[in-house]
Length: 146
Image (cartoon, rainbow, N blue to C red; front, side, top):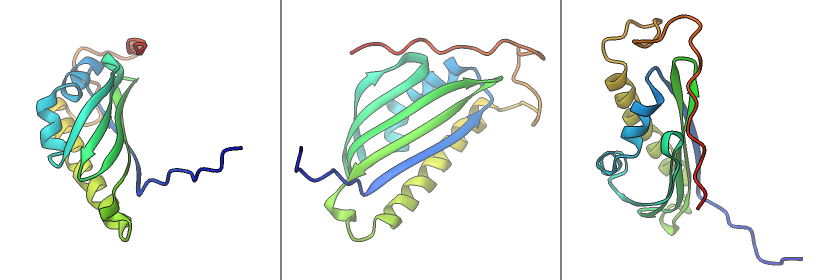
């Protein structure tokens, strides 16, 4: 039996946002390091797994230390952008709720800007351009083995 204490993360965040856009268009932005520095200016993400159309996993250091992932799930005429952050830092041990709220609000601003950019010109409630009623759901490429 292992007697070592379990790792406790000060930040354990999950967020989901639906974007009416082709999975490849969303993946292109998620995989672009220029976006990362805008989305997470205080973090240094290191790719641990590039999943192609399915997203990216990172090891993060900087203000917090841990792991992060953006998983892209094709759904209907768009994609669900799932964001996960599991991190810890001595700086937030006393008030992790403030840091969590700050991170969640910041991510929502960025993912909504991504959504606005990719859905630009689409009438709310209408399918994305090039998709008709009864269209087949696009599939993400299988995750690569590391």
